[in-house]
Image (cartoon, rainbow, N blue to C red; front, side):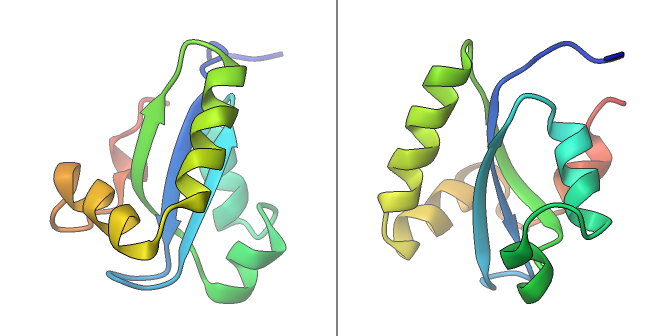
Length: 100
């Protein structure tokens, strides 16, 4: 049973500042980031050590979140870096700031 509400979200993770980036979508951000950190997220994230949550954005519907994820995945790297730095200029790991 879910103890957190369904909340569609797009997120960016990285291996390090200006490192490898991973863009994903989920309905439970806390669970999904925990999965990544435990090696159950994605093969790409596991292979490249993408463990730091550096940006996320909530959406009203999963369709809207998926559309935004697809949009961001098409962006060039500079745009993604700018998106992160607008709200997280120090590239802090935001996972610890999430409500459990």
